[in-house]
Image: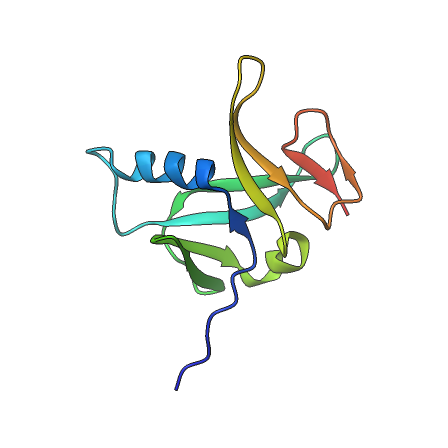
Length: 114
């Protein structure tokens, strides 16, 4: 019997709807996964990654509401417990990240420090 996979991040219903809209486009490559991760840079030290990519050797895979997701194993310590949402307002449109591990964040909401 295989153990249940731990899902390190969550997606709100709004984020799930927007991601599935992207996946329904004619040119979407269904062999790709939704990568959730971080990279160095940004005004607070690290920047969030969210995009469709191929799975790599050091990736951990999990599924949220039918969306195949991947995360580099080393990124989990920065992102565990994070909630990804979709904002559709006049002043702010796009994905937002609520990260309980961030000690600092920037005004744009895409950069953080630990």
